[in-house]
Length: 125
Image 1: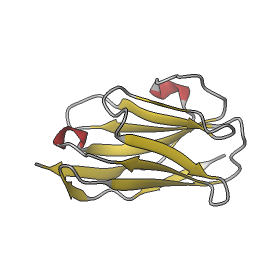
Image 2: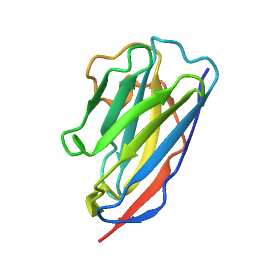
Image 3: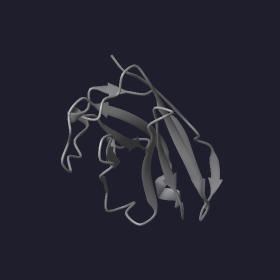
């Protein structure tokens, strides 16, 4: 069993940067894949980014590619989402998630087994 706690969301101006954190408790093995999703009001939850715990391979949604970077700190059992050049359309609740298996470019939310509680990111214009 893995529990995830996301943090770091806040109000930021367009063009600014923010780093989200997702601390995992419980055993996260090298086979895990960690994902970031977001959900804006009135919209479906959408994939943002993912990182494989073992080899740190990452992939991103086209809408954030080149602006967002996913990383992980093995010693802290934490994954991060560095968000640069933020836009108002990035405003959403951001969720971290963990899949117990190695994913290969998957972006579906039902591929993930565990979810954090979400953290609000608001980008003002």
